[in-house]
Amino acid sequence: MFEELTPQPPDKIIALLQMFRADQRPGKIDLGVGVYRDAEGRTPVMRAIKAAEERLWREQESKSYKALLGDADFIAGMRSLVLGDAVPIERVAGAQAPGGTGALHLLFELTGKAGAGGTIWISDPSWPNHAAMLKHLGMPYRSYRYFDEATRDLDREGMFTDLAEAGRGDVVLLHGCCHNPTGANLTPDDWARVTDLALSQGFTPMIDFAYQGFGDGLDADAAGVRAMAARVPEITIAASCSKNFGVYRDRVGAALVVCADAERAELAADNLASLNRVNYSFPPDHGATAVTMVLTDPALRADWEAELEEMRNRMLRLREGLAEALRRETNDDRFDFIARHRGMFSRTGASPEQVTRLREEFGIYMVGDGRINVAGLPDDGLDEIAKAMVAVGL
Ligand code: LMR
Image (cartoon, rainbow, N blue to C red; front, top):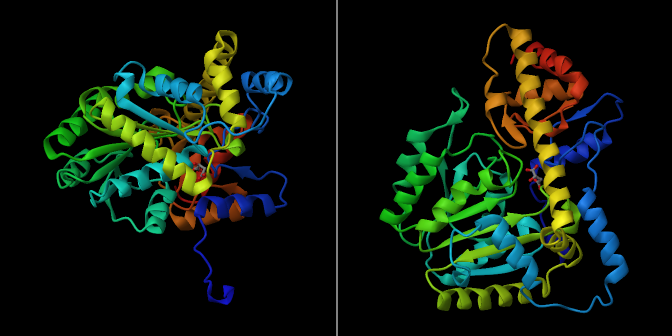
């Protein structure tokens, strides 16, 4: 029967990662996949996670199943990390999921089960897996304008014009912070305007929250989501621990569903548990338990927050550094948006041809749409990268 299978379109980020690994050139630079790197180019296990894992190894006496929704302490910890005290806890249902992608998948499915049959609105551009997942699930989706290629900032007018068409039963997917792939983010005023629209038009916001702590800080990055959650009757959030806890391959994420009241939250929790059961039964536990330990132990938590802050500051320094190097190289400020953007990514404006030249001639890997991962920038190679960008005509 398998002769009937057809080759699948590759995910461009994962395909690039494979291409980078196959490249034998010693000076190659990976600005592709969204994985944090330190000054030595490593993606270390965070100190607090290492300490939690050590303790886990000593203290864990069983690996028997927990609950279909995962660990209640993990959910409580993530709910508080993401939402603070923006909504009463009895209105929030939560499920542990395999990474942010697992949480998104769960929330898409829950939306489908709710049967409103509306459209899922995703930003143009967005993380490519959003559209791929919705296609796979057979759910109708449309895009709303988001990024202005000329200003390298939000296309506000386009976004609000398009979202004015989203109505009851529709879901509007927003990036909680650190927009992927552009690096251009909603201001507090934009969050308030989208919230007003959600209330007047009746759509349900959904937040992909994969980079909390990578932009302006843990609380600052959650401010928009919290302000919105405090005002709307329903909102869903897919929170990933891959980047801010550095537990990528352990697959740790949480699906949070804020409902109008406690009764509906119970119903949502029941449905999330049933979806986990039919998809993979119990969510993976190891990484989630380590994250729970870090969130609940004051010393581990303080160390995690300190290390996360170091990572965030490194990315900010690299942003400033590359913008400065490009200013020196071009004698103008057209790349200053790199310093203004927040999070791991910026969309540089490189065309597919320029991306190919940067890769082939200079060993610099970026995603085909011109997205760079600033954490992949080498501290001592910013001038060379700026020169290469200008050499290909950027
Ligand atoms: C990215 O956008 O590069 C990351 O979110 C990693 C991934 O899975 O695509």
